[in-house]
Image 1 (tube, rainbow, N blue to C red):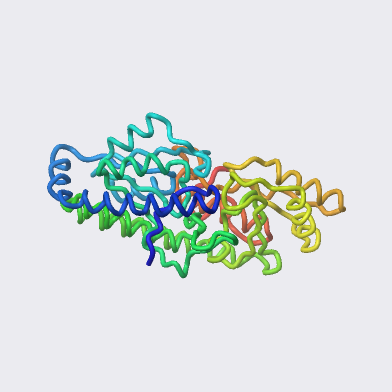
Image 2 (cartoon, rainbow, N blue to C red):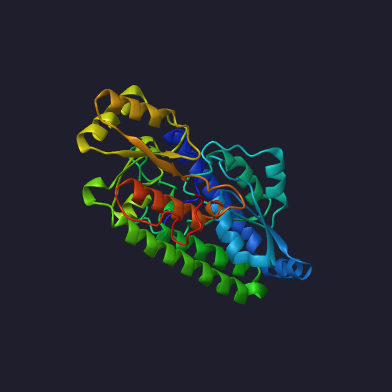
Length: 340
């Protein structure tokens, strides 16, 4: 399997260069840091824990679940933050450089954090991509980006369980004294992911097959479509840095009218402008389309809420999609915890 610790949906050439340079930097620095890892980790743990810094909320949620009270976990990107556009602040860089362990998504998601993550790795920090165990045969390759992959893997709970394995193994490697707890908490979290996946399979299967077309603001749901058998259409590309043109809108209006699609979805981190243009275009052609709900794509819900967890995020998405497209799902989701 090739190393996939790349960064940045910039130009294709720039992405390739950044991918190669960062991959070499992280491999080299990771090897150097490994030499004294067990001794240092033991000392840190005896003195009252260590610090883990994470990037996106979906990664933060896994790490907090697996680390428990063994470490302090600091997430850099909160609710409503778009990782494609996020630029680290000075305080973010300071947090990265003061961390003992760093977890990020990888697969080119955190593009504008490249320099900061390389700097942390060069300083000897333990820097890990949670997607590193995914088989390339599973990963989706966007058209025009040969060898580069769609980073939105968390949209498939079964695949996201692989990220739990990465976090568990890297924490055990860094802090072997906490192995039993890491294994126990990782297994418990994996069980919750399996239950969530079973719920998603069940309620999404209730959507009539001709209606299994998911139209969203940007192309973040392809792994969702692959897992649950939906055709997915995003107005923008994989990155929210891309822009939709008039022809893109016209093409999707044609799709809505011809397929008699009755609901489209907005996203919490993406402007509604293009979705509203779709609805207006369909209306002008005599076809009524409604907003089926707001989905969480690149960020979870508000901190401190059920939707502000990974489990709640996917529950909300699955439930909203099933209900809006003619399927059956509980109004308040799998556990009855979704906000009214």
